[in-house]
Amino acid sequence: MNVKIDSSKIIKPLYEVTPPSTTTHIPFNIFDNVTFDALMALIYAYRPPTPPTSTIEIGLRKTLSIYREWAGRIGEDEHGNRGVFLNDEGVRFIEASVDTSLDEVLPLKPSPSILSLHPSLKDVVELIQVQVTRFTCGSVVVGFTGHHMIADGHAASNFFVAWGQACRGMEITPLPVNDRTIFRPRDPPLVEYNHVGAEFVSKSVNKELVKVNNDEYKEKNIIVHKVHFTLEYLGKLKAHASFMNKNAKTYSTFESLIAHLWRVITKSRDLNAFQDTQIRISVDGRRRIIPRVPDEFFGNIVLWAFPTSKVKDLLDEPLHYATKIIHEAISKVDDKYFKSFIDFANDEKVMTRQDLIPSANMNNESLCPNLEVDSWLRFPFYDLDFGTGCPFVFMPSYYPIEGMMFLVPSFIGDGSIDAFIPLYEHNLTNFNKICYSLDLKAK
Image (cartoon, rainbow, N blue to C red; front, side):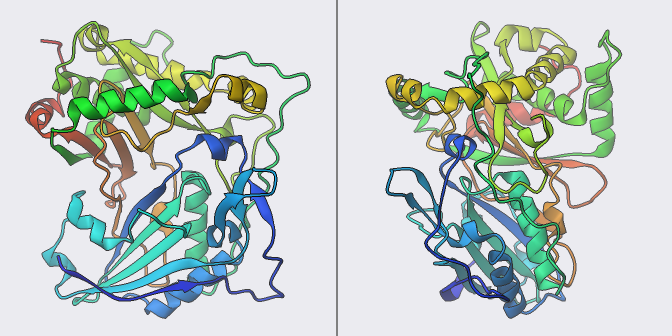
């Protein structure tokens, strides 16, 4: 796939009223500061008829006038507080073309070639970049990159819906709630949980862990493997996971699938039986914090659950065991936990004295023996309609970080799920043999 860049420019917000001040600085809050300090990339594909590129561009400019953070720049104010300047310096907008039909390159696979369908993630100051790539058949691929410190998945999906509304000439609704100052510590603070080793790690420990992991696995080839789980299979998996639940509670499809993948990947890795393994699972605080934070809140409000098990127990026990651990770990990230984190993270003296940094890190080449899952199952990413219909492909870009999984709803729209799973090439054969097995055994 030879992608030709036809044009690249900066576009700025398009205001229908008098433009606001461009000198405002919005400091990041504790949830922004603890998330991934990195650009994330998504891929959308549309069948013809598709709207003109000008429609996509003008719709984006109108949306940026409401979601102003995206058009700003990250930097520090006079007090050293990192945040975003609402200076309207704009976002990058690229037009590209491919001298072939989209059908000739389908299915789009999570491989290095897909990186040409969105702007670069390296050495970028723009907080959003958009690339519109047209194929000879009339199909369009829209590649999007956005900085994670500006918005979590929930907030980003609201932005995409708004962008589609603007392209269709509709009023943008609902409007975002732009107030990053609402997460204030209690007086007196009450830190009830240990946040070191969870959201934070010491700088020295993190540096050593990254070095050890990257040195140990740097010579091994990583393949991002896409796995499709049908609605029928997910139903069987959910029933299997809930079979031995004495509380008669049915575990969720998400919990059951993650438990299954945790076991399958762990077995494929052939780890030491007495080694610990854990999963990092994001938990949206909008439904956890009391009083409830509006769904329209724009920014980050995510913490993580860390279910942990010995490898031997994970594989020897039935699926219910892993599902129960996951369910209980997620349940513990509740209102009390979020408020404990808010109190802890706002104590600058403790943060400085312990030399703490966020544990969220995109610099690892491998997470082994652990996993991380980013679930986009509940977000309306497929609702990005520029005026001629919704996308038939939505997927993450190519992220070859072993153990960092993405779950997305299948474009089929029947409740089936696609999982994007980076694995070492030498583990892929074992993974494929047991991926759909409901009766996984340690030996």
